[in-house]
Length: 439
Image (cartoon, rainbow, N blue to C red; front, side, top):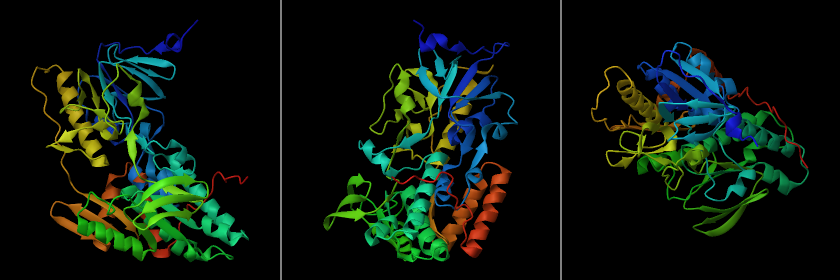
C-alpha cells in the first residue's frame, strides 16, 4: 500500500548548493522576511492563497466599504523584484523538524532554515459549534460571507411581514470589544443608520440595533482608560449599544444569550459577528516532534524567536508567543513585521560566508503606537506621549493605513474610495456575490 508521503515528489535542491529557507505564510511577517533577507540562499515562500491580505482593513470589505482587491495584492507581484525568492501556492500539511522537511500538497521540500508565519485563526473558546451562526473575520472569504449575510438580512427584512422576524433581521450583535469588534460595530452602525437610509422603501434602517458585547469592564483594553471611554462614547454616538462585563452563554440561529450585570438576557437576532479571540494556526499542531504551545495555541519561542531545541526553526507573527522586555508581544502587524526583520538578519548572518558563533540578539519589540477606527471622523490613537481621539486620531489612522497598504494601486484605489464615501456616504461594494438560500 502506498502512503501519502511516498506519493509526494521531493523538490530538487538548488544546483549551486545554496541553502534553502522555507517560509510558511505570506502575511506581514513572512513577506517582510522575504524582502529583508540578504543572505546567499534560496527562499521558498509557501501559502495556500496567491495573495497577501491587508487584514487591518478586512472589516471594510465585510461592511461593503471596500472591494476585495483593494485590500489584497498578488504575492508574485509584491515579490517580483526579489530574485532569490520562489513562491509556491500549496496547503502545508506537515512539518518535520528533525528531518527538516515540509509537506505541501503533493511536494516535499527539504529545508536548511524554517520560518513559520502561518498567522492565527478565529477561536470560539471551546464552543466551535457557535461558528455556524457567529461569523468570524480572518480571511477574504470570511469578509465576503459577512457582507453577503448582512446585506441578505436587510433584503429579507424589506419584504418580511412578521414584525418580530423583521426586528431580528435588523439586529446585529458583535461579540468582542477589541479592535476588530469595535471597528465592525462602528462600521455596521454607519452602514445601517446612514448608508442604507435611502435604499429601502418598506423598512427604516435607522431602527436597526447594533449591540457590542464585551466581557471586560471596558472596550479596547490595550488603550488607556480615558481613550477606552472615548471610544465607548463615540460608538454610542453612532447608536451602538455597548454591553460591558457581559459574557456570551449561547449563540443560536435566532439569538444570543448574554449574562451581564443585570442578569441573563437573550438578544434576538439573525446576525452575529465574532471578534472575540484569535488562536494560533492549526498547522502548529502538525509540527513533529510536537512543540510547546500556550493555551491559545501559539508556539512558545525563545528570545531570538527560534523554537527551543531547534535553532534553525523560527516562529513569527500571530503564531508566536514571545516576550520583549518582560511583556508579551502583541499580535499586531507592526510586531510581525519587526519579527520578520529580526529573523532575516539572524539567518542572513548565519548562512552567509561571514557566519560565526556569535550569540544571537534577543528580539526587542518597538511599540510605535496603536490606533483603532470607530467610524467616519471617529477613532482613537496612542503613540508614545500622544493621546488622540476623534477627527485627529481618524486622520492619523487614515494616513498610517494608506502608507502600510501593499502596492501603489491599492493605495490610490482605497484613497479615492474613502474620499467618495466621506463626501457622499455611499458604499459602492454593496454587492451580494453568493446570495444565501433561505430554507
